[in-house]
Image 1 (cartoon, helix red, strand yellow):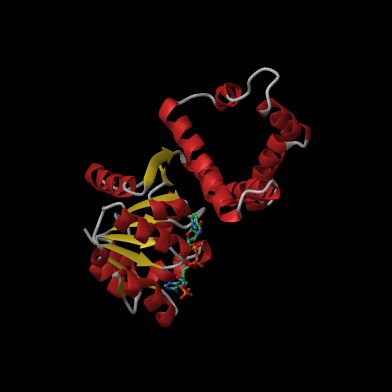
Image 2: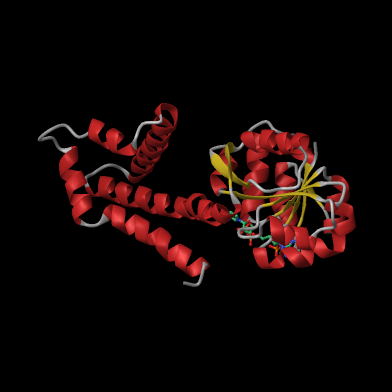
Length: 263
Ligand SMILES: NC(=O)c1ccc[n+]([C@@H]2O[C@H](COP(=O)([O-])OP(=O)(O)OC[C@H]3O[C@@H](n4cnc5c(N)ncnc54)[C@H](OP(=O)(O)O)[C@@H]3O)[C@@H](O)[C@H]2O)c1
């Protein structure tokens, strides 16, 4: 199967690398186009991906065409290749561009699915949230789900929740990175070399997440499990509560939601 990216920025590159790293496809089964040809070449050729001059060439090459430009650019890039996309599986990663939008932009009968991946797909530990409403056949949906299963967790949600799922999965890596940085700063403050601090903190985050996924445990129970009575961890938990740690995280999501929905 050949995968073509229209737009080859951060998200598309993360997906392309993850698909190869995860063994879904060989690098030469991935092709892309973008505006800046020299930059595209730098982002494709060293990895064995193919660089195309136009979206029409990408559509001719690929079985699955991934729309990976900024949301406001989707209409412009789709319009000239509407006919070519009729026989393809069109997968969108553009945030907030959903089924109804593509029904308006694409030719009637085109198979399309809107998704929201996050950048950890690059290391096959991502999330790809799918819009439950789509126009793929059962076989085409299976193909796409199988493809994305190589880069992380695949999860379908109803259209009204796609935006929030995208916010949680797409924006939160920034928050987690801030947490990692802060914890590593604390480690450095107490004498741990910085490189070791990043490695141990990041692995702790990975391990805690994996433990929750594997056991399905309530996060509160996981917290309780490391807080012995009169112990040390509970002192830190108390301090975080005092400083509004959980409230701050919830407020961050509320603020993004308010911006997206211009509340
Ligand atoms: N980054 C994330 O974490 C994330 C998460 C979820 C969803 N998304 C979605 O992914 C999409 C891309 O985001 P991004 O962060 O990857 O943006 P980005 O890094 O700015 O990449 C955008 C890409 O689109 C290309 N492009 C612009 N106009 C084009 C045109 N007319 N024809 C072909 N290519 C064109 C750009 O090419 P040039 O660089 O040459 O101009 C660039 O390669 C967005 O819709 C976003 O909502 C991103």
